[in-house]
Amino acid sequence: MSRKIKFPFIFLLSFLFLFLSVFNNFISNVSAASDYNFIILGKYSKTLNIGDEFLLTAFTSNGKKPSFSSSNSKIASVSSNGKVTAKKAGNASIAVKIKNAEATCRITVNKTVIRLNKKTHSMENGYSFCLRASVSTGHEVTWKSNKKSVASVNEKGVVTAKKPGSATITATADKTSATCKITVLTPKVTLNRTKASCYRGQTITLSVASTSKSRPKWKSSKKSVATVDENGKVTAHKHGTAVITVTVDNVRKTCLLTVKKPKITFQPDTLTLKPGAFFTPSVTVSSGNKPVFSSSNINIADVDENGKIHARQPGKAYIYAKEDGAKASLILTVR
Image (tube, rainbow, N blue to C red; front, side, top):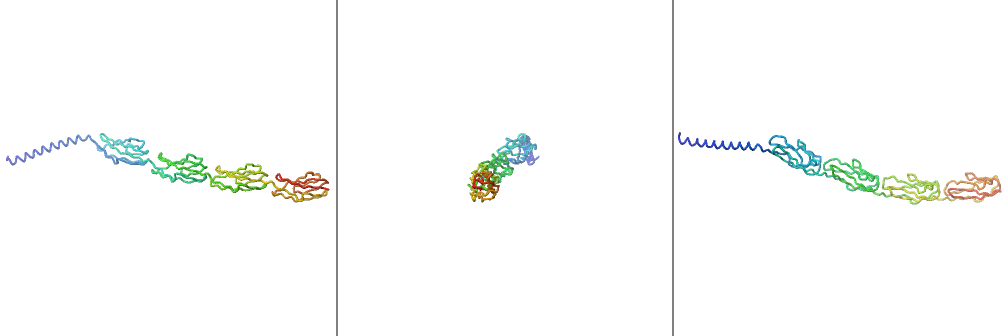
């Protein structure tokens, strides 16, 4: 064989030997590397609101299903399939594992924010208004009053004033709260009269104006003199004085009522009649009420309920007219 042919042949054999050595070394390295795995996550960090859920996807180099665990399941829990559920505000890490490989996803759970349309509100007793809540998670709120006797609240946030004072209305969602301070105002109360007078049997109607919707309560200090009904109608029963009080939410206003003693006059106030004669004198009573008539001696003269006198036998007698503690007399001579 010529020298020219031998040299290229030797060179080709040398190159082939070197290629086989490198290839064999490569195959050995690939085989050794098969013991090292890796995981690729769909997310490596995620921000959630309380109650939110999301699926954490994971690709594993060995094709096997990974295990999932949470560093704090009270903040964010995770199922065996990678479903993450936000529980409360804070931070947690979700660990995804296979043999010889691990990856983590950082979870941030936002604190729920509640905003109310009012932080303070003043209102008159008996009135209502609606508190509105805006919740960052969109969750429903629950409502509560710390003093239901002052102000109550229903499930829709409608606040109703019950009596003067202060109460705190609390809206709660996801263990987060917001409050509104309610002040139920002391009402302004006015009575149309502070003094009044009348006679027995007469009536006066008192009227009250109030900024509160509470029903007024009426009372008389002396019912034997005058009484008052639930509508403020006062009825006089006898002469004297009584204090009429109206109360609205512990605010009191009074009216001093005087039931006047009437004046009675006879015309004439002296009279002479013959036995058997009849006479009706003129009697005036300032109250307009009918008086009660009587005789001091019915053997000499008597008198009927209308004041008609009947003279019976000679003598002297007094004819009386009485009304509510007042008394007048007529001197009668029969002869």
